[in-house]
Length: 303
Image 1 (cartoon, one colour):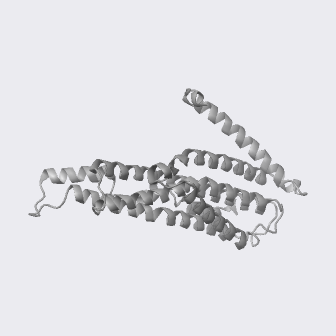
Image 2 (cartoon, rainbow, N blue to C red):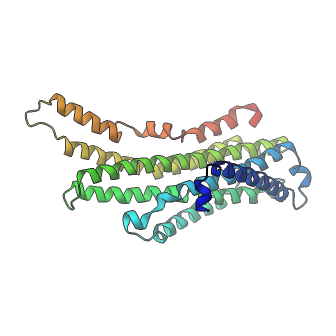
Image 3 (spheres, helix red, strand yellow):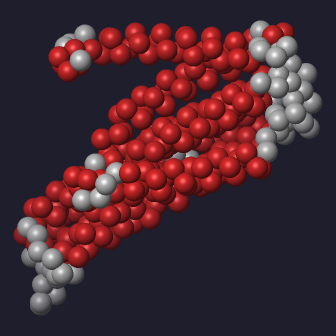
């Protein structure tokens, strides 16, 4: 397998496998949707599109999980066994899943009755796919606390090691945010397509209000921001402190050209001029779920 991954045909192999998985999962979703006497509704074009979107989402979730699992190196980077933060995330995900279950869904009593089970399965897959990203953010927070001890003089470390750690945390934060944004955006697009399918097959708009899709997007966008923003702010605080440590203010309050140039280069390298809004927008637009939800309300084709 390792030799195959290094072969130049590996991307093609992955693409073919992804297409096969997409088609297979789409057909499986449609078959499950059509069970229990729901075949007529499942065979409609709108539910066919939704089934394909579910298959595509599952493939995307698997891809995101596989390409972000390297962010969970707790043992190597923090000296903590992975099962401990993984257990904490499992509890967090279970609470979130139970909340969604308890809060109910507008499709709970609608036909096809099998749609609710598929939606909950997709939610579970999304929570699993998000695990490496969330664990990666928590790991970064732990690493940043260790950097704080260095900057406070409690422990010793070389300046280049601290700089490398901050740059690594920055890259990991960006990957984690992108993964969460894609998962949430995909889930909300699926919810919009699901609503369209129900309305196209005779469900009254009042039974599946457009606001439910908007609230769905708002909830998971808010959770993603609550997970990301504290870690980003912690990283930025440590990065600014490092710049101040390397280039402290001149005693005579007269910065030289070399001081200004060096401080500017280090600031640019770290990217401390970035803001929460800028990073959120760049990372594939984590606010896109709200925009997609709004489109599902505003565009007649989604109503």
